[in-house]
Image 1: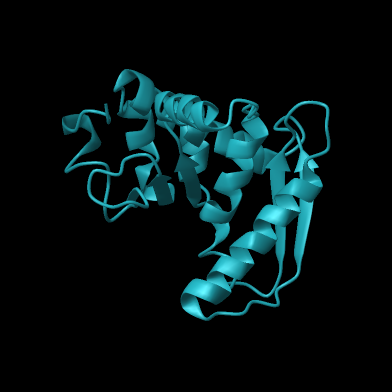
Image 2: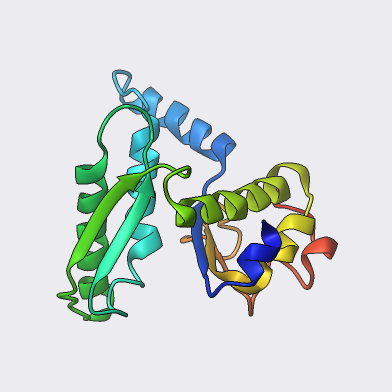
Length: 178
């Protein structure tokens, strides 16, 4: 499958979060507001604007397919995240995009692009959890941008990695973040 990805004109973009850091933030938040209850959708919903805020002015129209998560319909929440991304684009960069956006919920078995994303995400997961870089190395030329939101050692907004700026000199030489 990795060879198939290399043979096609695809770009992969992702926002990654560290579950241990998120867990600590939730615990800290619970100390301030004891009635607060974490829900995984909150994290997902906050990542959507981050992922799309620099992408929604590049084409005349968009059809964005996202993976269904559970039984509930998250289309409206996803659309709200995209509208937030457009607002951020306007506020931060002064760019107003009128491009229409169609949002579609699907599953990887029904949609090839979601299958491709699963392979990229699997490679990233292997890198972050096991320090195993061979899979993400195979497809690194297809990476558009990976935002590690929780690596704030140098910048509060996290680290930004691309084909031109990989995780380290060579992924094989750079240990994953702690």
